[in-house]
Structure formats: structure tokens, C-alpha cells
Length: 348
Image 1 (tube, rainbow, N blue to C red):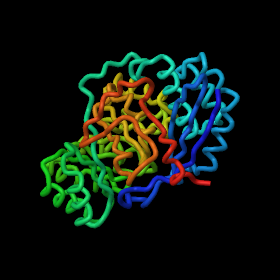
Image 2 (tube, rainbow, N blue to C red; image 1 turned 120 degrees about the vertical axis):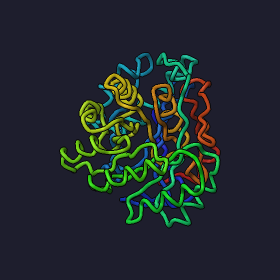
Image 3 (spheres, one colour; image 1 turned 90 degrees about the vertical axis):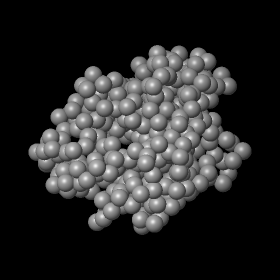
Image 4 (cartoon, rainbow, N blue to C red; image 1 turned 30 degrees about the vertical axis):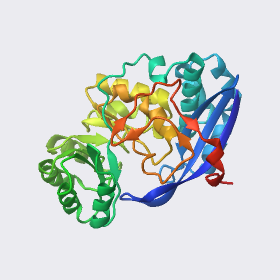
């Protein structure tokens, strides 16, 4: 099996700001696995916060080359442990290869990936649209540019978070979700939760830092007026059971957990533990979004707007429009790389 990687610079439609960083473009790595004329695609984005620069991800991907022929006849679900060992535990590198392997397998079998897994496509959730931190007029303008979404996810972590939500609420009756990206204290979270509940907010995502004392996380879990969803605290499969003590649900990110294989396992375990389930995304192309969308039948919540946040992209696949996610009916994940458009995105 042949491996090829593409390093891309993806332009955002607007600067995207959360409590700890801001970006105007995203560095993305596309993995292409090819055998017998079939091409499978996976994607992972560079992430300095989690310690995964592009150079390190590419080096880890190269270490997996000796394993790749096993995917010609082997099941990605059964090969994941070998993959993770091959990349020395680099979950970001593993995620792109694992996604590409599932895409290749589905195309070989002539089935969408979710069907290969035996899932049923019914009652899947709509996606939220994310509004990054900005001035309040700019955040209102971003909402007005995307007026028909049923759910908006609002990034918070400012000195005037409640005022942001109040003014956005004046613009729409849609459901709100908020994500503080570790920027609040326990006291702030509990106090904010009551006001946010009254403003039509559905849940709060990762309000406390990962380093916050466990007693603070437990206190928030017990006293918040809204469900608390783990993100930064739920990165890999072993985090799921621990989160059941401090959170009402988990947000699985494919790049952080290592791919579709561990993502599938994490969601199934979360459901067994009575946790609410969500899959989120980075700012990424339709290749990564198409992979993550295969998990929709296992979700209570979805945040798969990463490609919508781009100004344009050299990929296509599952369509997310006004929150509605098209059912993947083509073989594999449905992802396609538009090679005739690559030149303007390629990094050296």
C-alpha cells in the first residue's frame, strides 16, 4: 500500500479566536493510502497547544509505512494497536492514517464506513455552528452570515461572557451551546450556568482547566444548572471512565483520540456509562469532517462545522449545510481530494 501526504494551508473565512489562541488559517495534513487504484483519505491538523507541530506529525506518519500493507487484507479496527505502536503513541499521526484506512476499506467493500461498522443511520443530530470570540458586533455579524442554523456554539472566556450571550440571544431563537475552553473557575461556572440556562443554553463545554483540582470539577458537576461536557479532559480512551465522575457527557475529537477506531470505542463506552455523546472537530477540510460524520449514529450532539468555517478548500465530501448533515451514501467516508485545486494550498 502506498502512502502520500499533502501539507495544506487552509484559509479561514474569519479569524477564529478561542480563549487561548487565534488563527487566520489552519495547517492540515492529508494522508492518502492507495492500493489497486483505490484511494483512502484521512486528515489531521497541526496543533501547538497539544504539542503536535506539522514536522512531528509527518515524522510519525513515516514510521507507520512498514505496517501499511497489513491494511490490504486487515481490518482497521483490529490493526489500531499496531498502528499506535508504530507511530510511538502519536495519536495525531495515527488519526489520519486510521481514517484513511477506514475510507480505503469502505471503498474496497463498496459500502459507507458507518455501514461497515453495522450502524443504523436514524435520528442523527444536527451540527452546531461555532462563533469564535470577537467584539460583540462582529460575533453578531458572524451569526447573521449563517442565519439558518438550529444550533450555535459560542466560544467564551472573556470578561463579558454573559453579555455576549445576551446580545446573541436577541438575534435568534436557536439553541445555544457555550465553550469556555478551560477559561473559567468553578465559582464562575456555577454562577454562569443559571444565567446561561435562562438564556436558552443547552450545555457548557469544558469550563475548567485540565489542571483544576478534582474537587472543583466534582463541585461543578454537582451544582451546575446545565450539563457539563468534557473536551480537553477527554482525549483518549482511558479518559472516558474518569470523566463519568465529573462530567455529564464527553466530546470526542478524532485527532486527539487517535482516529475513528478509538473514537468508535469511546462513544460506545460512554453510552454504556450513561454519558451524553458528542463528536467535535478542529477547523479542517471536508476530508476530516467526512470521517467524523461516520460516527453520527452514536451521538447526542454534533459539532462538525470545521469545513464551513473555511473560506474555501481543496476537498469535498459529506455536506454540512445549515446544521443538516447529509447521509454518507458513497463508499468509504465520502471524502475526495480535489487535486486540480491543490496548488494554491500546498505548503513546502
